[in-house]
Image (cartoon, rainbow, N blue to C red; front, side, top):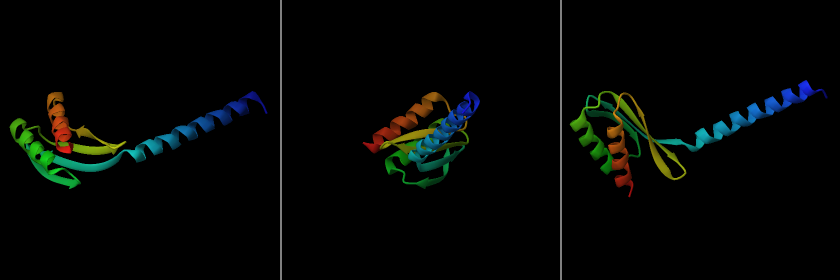
Length: 105
């Protein structure tokens, strides 16, 4: 076996490992809920959302009028993380995270 063929086999194995472990990591981060907010009002929501968090999101959205955003809650290792899509200030993101933490206690 030449050095070039050994190098090709190693590269193929490394690529396979990267794809396989990437799939496993994505699979562990499953979507728990999604919220769609348009012009300060909740337009739609799906999934298992704590009612206290939903109420707090509604109040924060009315006060700050964030525009069109999507909030996705993903569960990874028994903890729910929030992902935001759309223009949203960092301080408002932190308020949403705090509201979720309080609702899950």
